[in-house]
Image 1 (cartoon, rainbow, N blue to C red):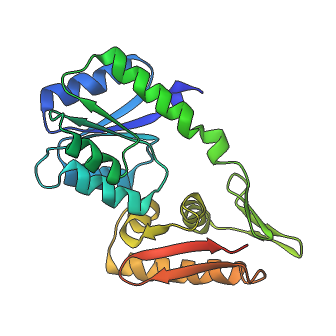
Image 2 (cartoon, one colour):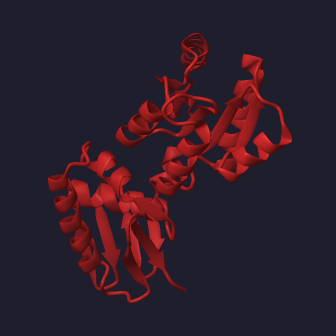
Image 3 (spheres, helix red, strand yellow):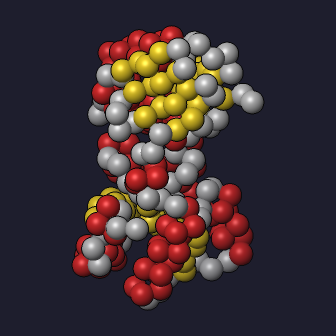
Length: 231
């Protein structure tokens, strides 16, 4: 795995620790970004592409558990490591319920943190070449790199926004993708007009996928969309 391709978001309200963590990760060859509270963390997560998240538990505006749950609704697979000053069993269980892949109690050594990150990345197989490989969706093959949706009867070229939307949906196959997350990721803004535009693109993707009855994009009321492949 090429560490240069790994982009890590650190969400930590302790400015000194947050800066120390990001500087250390940068020195070790990773890309790293810092958010100083849960709300800022969610906004950065929506606007940028990250491969790994390090979340403090106790933060202003939005705590780490709430942030993790919101992120898990948008992306079921991105690795999450929690940092906390607490060591009670109940807090550890709460972290895993919120979607954590691992848990570290402060204080900790930077070497141990790096070892945990590498272990989780190996376990979750977050290699971008794998992520961007063609994906089978029923009778279709979605090729993100070529911006194509292929079916035995036809090949549909995709626009950039269609391609990005389908990537998000296929990366979270059979999982709900939050509407705001999709908007922020593809359009960079969750305004009403962009929302209407996204609905048009979703309708186009449904039409492209209509040649296989096992594949559908469902509307999940009050939440977002789900790409479902049956059988």
